[in-house]
Length: 167
Image (cartoon, rainbow, N blue to C red; front, side, top):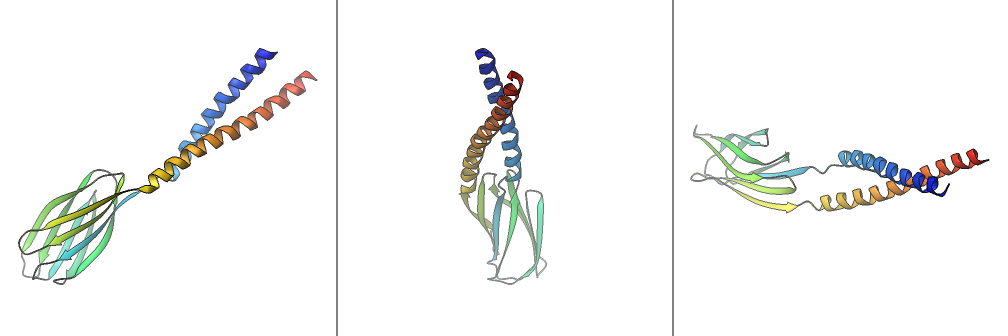
């Protein structure tokens, strides 16, 4: 009888851990942290920009009429390792294209694309996502709590089942 009780406890623990892994995986997929790049485009040229197209991570955004010494801001979702592709059409008909900058998952970026008459550039600042640490802690605590909860529920169920069987 003692061996049967130990085997039932081991079974309950294993089953509780398996269920907790499933629950934790489900919760993890529901609260996944997204990465973003906040982008500012500054027109430091002496000409008006008629149209501007910025592409990052297979997402493209277009803007019209950016006056000299003015800027626009936007946000891109980062879904992997990507670089910027920028296309500019000035009011005088001059067109320029360039690719520069780099973003990667696990970080949020604050990038500035500087458009000049001579050479264009991208200045980038990346910051680690503190939410990922919080999410990791949440998942570990959630796993431990759900394992304990399932263990207690199944222990109650099996103890009642054994008590009925013995009486």
